[in-house]
Length: 252
Image (cartoon, rainbow, N blue to C red; front, side, top):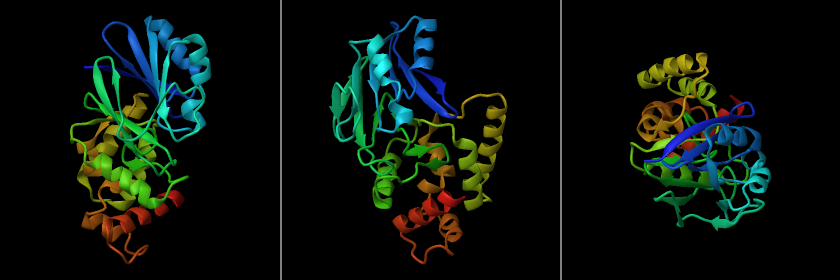
């Protein structure tokens, strides 16, 4: 089993550090090198790999400095996006090995056109596609692409731990409660999120099982969710419901 640590960056980013048992590690989406270098130094770790999910600067801004300090580092990332200094371009369907564990690469288009995720060892690193109680904005792709990407994630084993890249949980929960005010699981989760954030603790990782109970974007087949967007769309298919939810969240 790999050990995962969160390194906070900027206002609400998490850079995930994946550590094995002999002081080697990888980081996911290092938007800033400084907190990573500080953590590596404090814990006497050697950086072997950088995993990138997409090209936005708050996910790749630290790569250049990390490569300068660790010239041998393997920089893995989406083949179809403009990420500097990639040494190992990958796309959906590929797999990589990390400290003896196999991670599968998932194509997760929508937030960006070439967004990918990595799933292995019971863990999912999904960048800005799925968040606790929410999902990413559709910037470059289409609503249909984002909906397809979320459907791929929903098909993973329910115990999968989800490591997304932002601490957006509190605001996502507020929206989810606007969609499903009577969802008891969601009300309980809200209380937990308030407690964790009051102690400055991360609300992540979440699990796919929990997300299926609380995340409106994974609950587009539920009557409570369908009813909540009835004034926004007459259609009831999953894509129409997802699109109505995402547009509502954009202005929420």
